[in-house]
Each structure stands twice: as structure tokens, then as C-alpha cells.
Image 1 (cartoon, chains in turn blue, purple):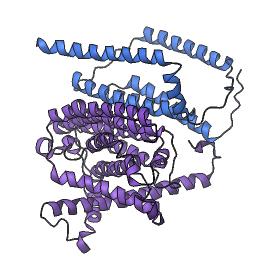
Image 2 (cartoon, rainbow over the protein chains, first blue to last red):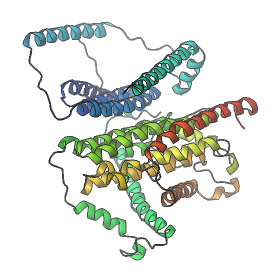
Image 3 (cartoon, helix red, strand yellow):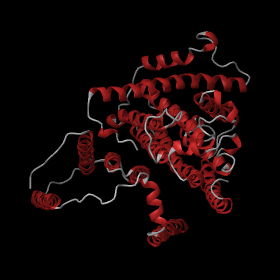
Image 4 (cartoon, each protein chain N blue to C red):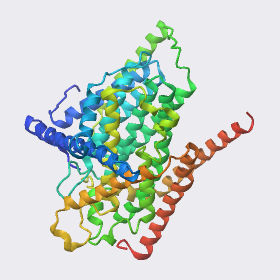
Length: 174
Length: 338
């Protein structure tokens, strides 16, 4: 199970670097105390994940990921600045029992994931990936997956209108 | 897309990429130096002044001296600033602005990376600079800087939407987001270029682009009469220079993009003029757009904040969506060639 056959190409180094960046960003996001720092390390993770998508030849997904999450992180940062007090930093109380249990849980989860990934086989796709995969995504979205696509749009519109309605009601009674 | 990470790792390959990057940096810094000079001269000319004329012949060395001054200035970090983020922000603003230049094709052969979603790449990376501006404003621990950063974020996010929408019509006609394909699609004569069938898209694109660049009349993040200097009040010396540098690099990138998307890229306006190399045509169109940006800066007053948001959501976005519908009808009636 533990035979890692690795060939040292540029792809391997890129993958290694990007995954380390993604993990570091995620860990820092949990550990930072200030909300702006957290949002920034979250953005770091998202950009690293976009890099991993590029390695998988999914440029469209990668750049859409950066486009959406960068905007999202900016908004998160602004709301974080506006809605939290940035003077006082409260110290987290240490709870040894809870932390030990959490550590055991995490190790178990890691073990399960590691075993599952090592045990799984990844068959190569039968057909070669199309050259212009953005075009293929568009074709699929408007032919085979047209109804799910439209449903998602309706869902987003409903959420959008709901957000506007909630914000309006707040305005009427100050 | 080129898979350059499949190349074997060697000093030779790394050296080639490094040399390419340094060449682009040199071109861009030369552009920025003389764009600043040209901007001051053009605005001076429009306002019956002389503009810079003391350092060197016709004041040509003025920007060089200005940069040297910035380098020699004391580099201050405010005592109550968030030190790490304060230092990180200019870097974070500059890096994406430089990365954006990798996908711009200057000619059929002259391009660094041929990405099949070229336009999305630009939009995605330019958003990262917004984060840097918000961080810079917040880390300065200054009211004006924070307000500038907030305004910048609101403005960038609002205007990104019409900017992307304005290019959708063009993408529908071309059937590709690849910048090289878009240029290749545009015909030989200048009336076959995208700016005529996509005139609404072109207008929306230019307005949204000026706003994305934070230039007058949309320079609210650094409105000096309201906010002292906006998000970079506390910055001095070379850190300030990096913010300005990335701003001018975006001018360069947007002018290149407008040339490529709407003005036929390196194609000559008439096929008879083919003997002049494409790079010169590209540079001419590019220079026209840069001049246009300076021109509106000298002419138009600044918008108010409420007008700014209204313009993006109530005027530009409906126009961009109308353009998409019209393009769809056009393709249905006339076919893709019309």
C-alpha cells in the first residue's frame, strides 16, 4: 500500500508546492485571531486550489474559482471589518479534554481518508480530454445538463431576491 | 494551453522563462515612466500649462527623477499599523498586475502563455489587487485609508459585472475566450472589427474598464478632496511607488485588452497596409486608447459615490444584457459572420 512511485517532473513539484500552500492557508485561517488575517489566508487557500485545478487542465474552473472567491473574500473582509470590534483580541480558553478528543478524531479521519485514497484505483479516462474544454463545458451545460443548470439559476435568483427583501425590511423600522 | 510544467526541470528552461519575465518588466517600466510623462504633458496641454519641462530636454527625464526621489525617501511604517499586512499589501497589489501581462498576445507569434480562457484570467487576477487595496487601507489604521479601501472594493466588485458581461456578446460571435482566436476572428478591413457590431459592448467595456482602473472620473478610492489620498495615505517611498506602478500596469493591460478585443489587435486597418508590421499597428491602437484615458481624466469631473453605484447597476448592466440579447438575435438572423 505504501509504494509511492514518484517521478520528479515539474508537475510533481507544482503539485507539492500548491498542496502545501493550500494546507498552510487553511491551518492559518483557523489559527489567526484577527478576521482580516483569516480572510486573507482563506484567499491564499483558494488561489492554491485554483493552481491545482490548472494542473488538472481545468483552466476554466480554476479562473472562475479565483474570480468568485476573490470577490467573496473581499466582501467577507469588509463585513468582518465593519461588524467586529478590532480593538480587543480575546484569548481562547484552553480545554484539554476537548482538544485531545478533537485530535483523536482528526487522526482517525486522516487514517480513513488516507486508506481510502491509497486503496482506490484511478482509471484513466477512456477518451482523450478535448482540446478546448471550456467549449465542451458550455455545450454540455446547454444540452445534457440544461434543466439542472436552469434550476440552479432559479435557486440563485430566489436567494438574491430573498436577500434584497430581508435588507429592505430592516430599513423600514429603524 | 501549453503544459510548460511537463518540460524537464533544468537551468536552461528556468533561465529562458526568467529572461522573458525580465524583458516584459523592462518594457512595462519604460511604458510606465513615459506614460506618466505623457499624461502630465497631455493634461498640461489641455489646461493651457506646459507640463514638466525642466529635467532633461522637454522634461523627458522628469519621471526618472521622480522615481529616484521615491527610492531615496524615508520608508515609514505607522506605529499602530498592522506591520506585516502593511508590508504585504503593495506586494500583493503588484504581483497580479504583472502576472496579467503573461497572456497578452502582441502578434501572432509574440505571446508568452496561450491560455484558452484569456479574458477570464485577466478578470480573475485583477480582482486580487482589490484585496490588496482593502488590506492596505485596513492595515494603515487610518480612517481615510480604510474608507478608500472600502470604496475601492465596492467599486471594483460592482464594475467587474458589466465588464465581464460586455465581453459576452463578443465571445458569442467568436466562439472563444482565447485572445489570439478573438483577434484572428476579426476581419481584414477595419469595419469588420468587433467595435462596430459590438458597439454597445465596446462602450460598456470602456466605461467599466476606466472604473476598474480607478481613474478619473471614477477615482473615488483616492479622491483627494474627500479622503486626502485614499488607501495609500500612510504609504511612502517605494511601497507607494509599487501601488502607483501596479495602477499604471493595469492601464497598460486594459489598453492592450481593448485593442485585442475590439480594435482588431495587430491587424492593419486595410489589407493593403499589410507591409507595416503588426506590432506597429498594435502599438498605434494601444497609444490611442492610452491617450483617450488621459483625455477623459483631463476633461471629466469626478462622480459622487451614489451616482457611481447607480451607473454600474442601473445603466451599464442592463445595457450589457441588452447587448447579449441583440447579439443572440443577430447571430440567429445573419449567422455568425455578420
